[in-house]
Structure formats: structure tokens, C-alpha cells
Image 1 (tube, rainbow, N blue to C red):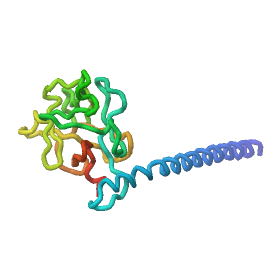
Image 2: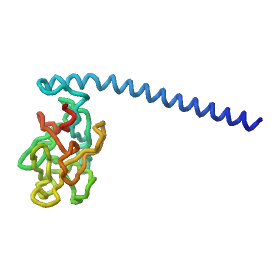
Image 3: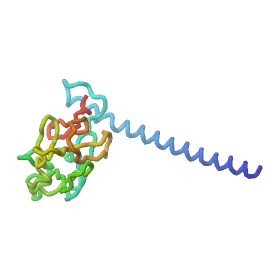
Image 4: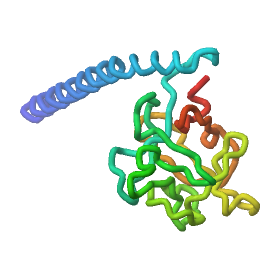
Length: 192
């Protein structure tokens, strides 16, 4: 009988902890939903005339850190976010707010061409790791363009904030289709 009471007491504590965790998740989800609603409306206005948005558009983003090796990821598109503004310049994809400021930063693919290799920013050197071609919505690493194994910019099946941006063999699916809009690299399927 004593063992049964202890187990019921333990189950009661675990149920209470689970209820608290679920409540915390619900509160955070509600707060995040409230925060993300306004930018989605602003983005919808920016894309007037297009198919109405189902959710917020997702853009390639780099954090506030402008150092070598900072990884790229997805983030909800925000019109005035300098972390999401890029300039296409003779094959280089430059982080816009670094242009003319001593050390320009570029989208870089590293020397590793394996599927799943993360893409990051690096000081613009104009080497093969930093030269890209935009072709029918695909952003292709130029050095692989005429090979049997073209490498593309790719995102995961998630369009959530902080989803990684990486390299993958070109297989023109929705994870590899982008639209360039006012300097932003937008995942195409988040616009419809």
C-alpha cells in the first residue's frame, strides 16, 4: 500500500510538471504568434498583387555578427533588416551593409561540397567558394554549373526562424527555389 501511494504521489508530481511545461509552451507560442503577426501584415503589403501569403515569407539571414564563419539561416522577412539585405555583384553575393566599409562580407560555400554543408559569410575574396549563378530561381555554386553534380543553395524542409541554409546537390525542389526581392533572398514557396 505504501509503494502504491508513493507511485501515485510521483505520478501526480510528474503530471503537475508536464502541465506546467505545456502551459509555458502555450504562453510562449501565444507571445510569438502575437509578435510575428505584425511583420506578416507588413510583408503582405509589400507583395501586393501576388498570391496572398499563407504565412510569413522566409529570408536568408545572417546574424548581427559580421565576422568570418558566421552561418546563414532563415528568418522571417523584415523589410528594414540589414541582416537580410544582399547585393549580387559579378557572381558575389555581398552582405549589403558591409559594402564600402573596409571588409566586405560574402556568402561562402567553404571547400566542402558535401550535401548538408552549412553556408556562411566570409570576407569577399572572389574565389570559387563565393561565386554564384542565379538560374531559374536556383542559386548555384558557379564552379559546379557545368558539372554533373551542380551544387545549390538549399534550406531544410522547415521554414521556421533559425532553419539552416546549406549546400545540396541541385534537385530543383522547393528547398532550392528563391526569389530576389529588394535585396532579400526569399524562399519562393513562402510567398504563395
